[in-house]
Length: 83
Image (cartoon, rainbow, N blue to C red; front, top):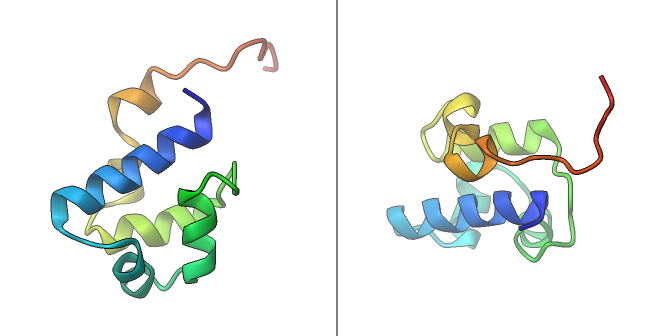
């Protein structure tokens, strides 16, 4: 699974759990509908932290809670020797 797909899965999962549509999430978060659509469709591969922060708040979560889930925590960047 690609890194960007992990965020899509997280957003879709939280929307499903809470009975929220992507359109409603856009309204709740203050993130433009087109921006959220691009993230969910996989067109935006690396969403800005400010955008993720707004989405987290809409889910009544801290950014840390939003980003703390198994798929993201166990993700390994291949060939990333940068330190």
